[in-house]
Length: 131
Image 1 (cartoon, rainbow, N blue to C red):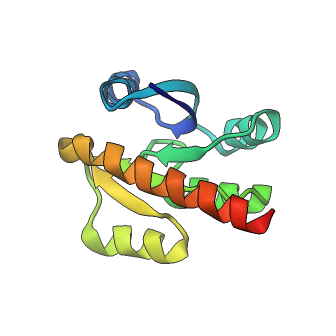
Image 2: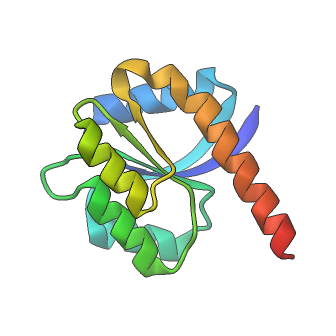
């Protein structure tokens, strides 16, 4: 199993458990923190080194666009993947243009594993190129 340090932006415990289950079945042993607010996300970004951020699109107190903005504000350049059950194609494309790597629909969660492998491999290569 590959180790994965993932910051998860999610307000539903059921969706969090489903996401963790998908990661485990996909061969990832996840070390994670789950946040629901900008403040908690900033603290998590300061406290740990993450490999990827996975964010729900819409939550009562926070959203994927706000989470992406928070990530940019932190100065960290991490892959950002949206996992959503309800996102319109136009909104998803706007978030991609703003800097998210991709979006995965919750009913097609199995697509998350190859996407994670792609962005983590790409991120690893870009860091090697910079060193």
